[in-house]
Length: 267
Image (cartoon, rainbow, N blue to C red; front, side, top):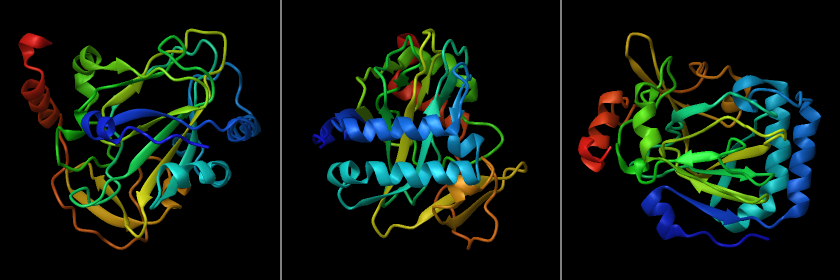
């Protein structure tokens, strides 16, 4: 069973921690990870990005089924459209840079909700998440798939504002995809397994925006399969067009937001 989450904190900070309290589901999710056959010291693994196709599709299907009873209670009126493993091996030196997740809907009207679930106690020492509170409200522009992230050149600035998201096994962080977040190395001798799920309000179309190398922003209406069956950052093929509702987010937008919310004298 799940406990409710702090919606006021979620709206204010863009993230909050919830207690899923489902040992059977956690054990089943760990079995899904075991079946992928990761080496104990793998640097980092995210199934939709690194094993798109049959593996990512099976992980997506199995995790959705495992978590559905809890997610239906936690997020009524939403459905899971993507699920995947996010795992760091023992002594992994690989950080995940601060970033934002893509825009998945017309965010003027509807927003996606992410769930990142810890399957062991998680803190900075073993590669736990860090989040920049309030950053989901810094821009209304589109976060597309593209060759380089708008967050790339601002890692030090985000690190100065981020706070650790500490969780016990079975807890999850509910977050807005626009929240700036990342994780550090796993300095322990133990695996840090977790899984992510993304939820969209019932009946809301899924969108994907892609920025071409020449800067052209393209939008398409996609289905769930796109996120597990296509190479990461790829342009959708065979989907109907969707007009972008804003321009693409830039690093200048983020730097201006940092200056507006955290002037240079405070950084």
